[in-house]
Length: 304
Image (cartoon, rainbow, N blue to C red; front, side, top):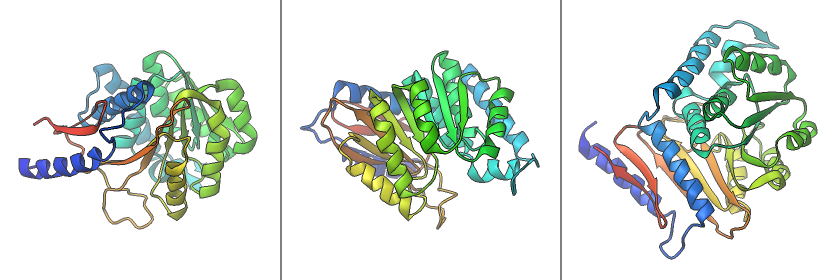
């Protein structure tokens, strides 16, 4: 890509990012620490900044997904191959982002809503395995998926994931008993406004004093857009970030090849009164980009 095109994209990103922190407002120490780790995680994805051991873990997940892509085992009316291609998080950049966030934030406890066949959970658990600490509980309401998810973790030889099957409302409190306080929660369950907001209300009291809450598919449909807007306006969600990482949203209802935010990140500090939102739109995931945070702003630097 010509340098002037890269610079144009970087300038656009810098304009967007500069809206995040107003100069007269400084992030709390806890929030700034989380922001810095999130920036490091994004940089790992953008710049392929993985160690040989990290790449080995990611490669094992990728190989498993390749096997699943031809797996004709039926789950009700769909095959494992269909579930992998249609409902599982893409390897790059989003699966890698989950892995990188876990590597950098080093959670002791991770709660996932919406297991499916265990692919997104595999990226999370790979990070926990590499950290040699932490546990993930992942909840799935559609019971026929549970044995497939268990097989995913078994085939990868991951021991830090527990799959709970059943109606989310009925098993959430069991998860709280096992996991609280929760360092990171990830909602990839039903993409409807009421369940998303209800889950946030139920989980919030069991989050750690400083925690991260992730929402998948925030631009998927009208209901998810409304839910995400409500979260942005919720005073408990101190910092909200709509994140796009250089690839069109393939499962968007009106897919048109445009790069749109997919992941909503929420940073929570229960002792802070801060309230801010930004859109992090990185329209080209290439090694020329570098995201960083400081006390006053969020920026993107030119590394070429």
